[in-house]
Amino acid sequence: MMTHMAAGALFRDQPAERPARWRLAALKRVPLVPLGIITLMVLTALLANVLTPYSPINISLPDRLRPPFWEAGGSLAHPLGTDPMGRDLLTRLIYGTRISLLVGCLGLIVGGGLGAALGLIAGYAGGRVDALVMRVTDTALSFPIILFAILLVVVLGASILTVVCAVALVLWARFARVIRGEALSIRERDFVALARIAGSSPLRIILVHLFPNVFNTLLVLLSLQVGWVIIVEASLSFLGAGVPPPTPTWGSMIAEGRDYIASAWWVSFFPGLAILATVLAFNLFGDWLRDALDPTLRQM
Amino acid sequence: MQRYILRRLVQSVLALLALSMLVFLMSRLTGDPTMLMLPDDASQEDIAKLRHALGLDAPLPVQYWVFLSNAVQGDFGRSIKGQMPVIDMIAERLPHSIKLGAVALCIAVLLAFPLGVIAALKKGTTLDTMANIVAVLGQSLPQFWVGIVLIQIFAVHLRWLPVAGVGSGWHYVLPAFTLGWFVVAGMMRLLRSSMLDILGSEFVKLARIKGVPEGLVVWKHALRNAMIPVLTFGAIYLTILVTGAILVETVFAWPGIGQLIYQGIVFRDFPVVQAVVLLTAGLVISVNLLVDILYAYLDPRIRYG
Image 1 (cartoon, chains in turn green, brown):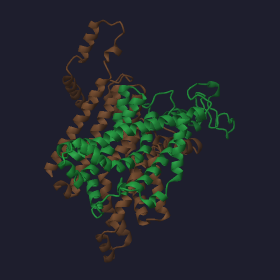
Image 2 (spheres, rainbow over the protein chains, first blue to last red; image 1 turned 30 degrees about the horizontal axis):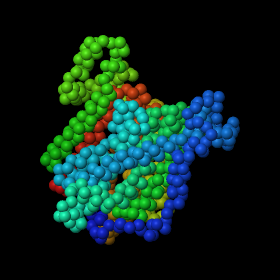
Image 3 (cartoon, helix red, strand yellow; image 1 turned 60 degrees about the horizontal axis):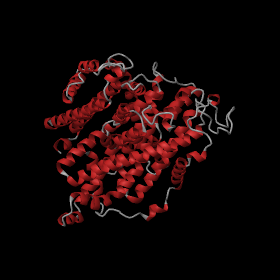
Image 4 (cartoon, rainbow over the protein chains, first blue to last red; image 1 turned 90 degrees about the horizontal axis):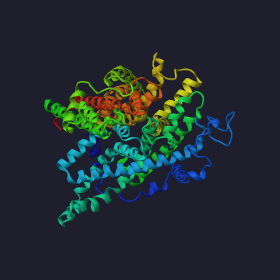
């Protein structure tokens, strides 16, 4: 409620025309390092089986808890050491990239799509529909919704599908909120009124006239939420409510290392570093995309 | 004012009912629990008997009503793993969680307020940049990993602090800091931007012209008003704390509600997870209601808006 009032006050002085085109100044400052890390992660996920000679799930107990190569007892055969089951840590990190990016992307598509659809409908319909959708959205936003995600996984059993649903459940409200605000303001513009006079159906107006106009915002929102989605997935995995073992995920790898904090620091350290690098890269990239496409979202 | 309170109260009760219905429907998605409780060669008659004894043959609305009235009376069923009433397990653990959350919130406020105000005063300097880095890292670091790294540094290597568990006051340091730090990032950024707004406003100029000492202008006149948006986000901070507590309590073996839900996940102990979710829902919605009422009391524009 307050944020809306504040946002209204902020934007009142600005010209009504929204910045639709890419801003040249921002284009010049393409964030090369984050972009490089993102490319590297995508390539790693795609080429996982080419990059490493080891299997991420085959257990080899004689090799358990080997340290990284620079520590006493380590060797270049296992550059980052091995885990408590004797599996190569780097291999599991590489395969873990797949789960993080896959669950992240699917969760974003489902959650973002659902949120955007609800936001567009609420914003266009207005009145009671709008009030109801926003009531539910506000409740979801002011509630540790991850609890319901956990409940969902416990009830349905852990699999990629349930984890994607859980992530989408946590995510949708953030999209509904912002997209609805955008749709609300676009609805008042002349071209929408003209389309209505010309006899366009509500569905057509939403798809052909509203959606393309909120697309930039949607893109920025998606990119800003990638990092967060990866953290949610890792948190669920860490708690044992993620993609079940033996599939390697960064979160579950950290959980496995928890019992070896004193003796084998590397088991939980490197997966966390991977999460940090990926999330930071996506966040910085998202910040840049926002400045380039839609700076009015800065207060998010 | 009374009408406003009444309206918010009704909304809160409706939200709670909707959430409880969601939990109930989820619990019925698990399938038929009788299949797990009886041997494979149980006769149809035995199955029907047990279903009747558990009330599973009643229509769904009736089952929901039983579920709801039990929950209101504090009966959330028995834990599958612990073989004791779930409500007793929660009662035993709740104080630990509340104490940890309170200490974490204090740490967050003590860090975020000075950092936010200083970042606003020294806008554009190295200090401001550093505060910004703290905020960005707060968004990018997985909380449970931070906890593990802190244990490795301060408990395993330096041996300054205990590794995990409860006991002396020293046991609070690492978990409370880990939990609080994630509130700091958001709180600090919010305070910084609202401080910048307020410092440019007319009444701050007036105070300065009147000759009020600069320290008083910043820390009393400006900060008081800059705090209002922070209060609005109270519910969000509570959400961050509750979510964080699950992860932090798991990392530090803190015997609170968060660790209970973790054990519930590990053992697929559905009654435990369900009860924690319902109780947390009640807690969060009540606190939201209280904050809104407090807010309307402080700012008349809300009541009449």
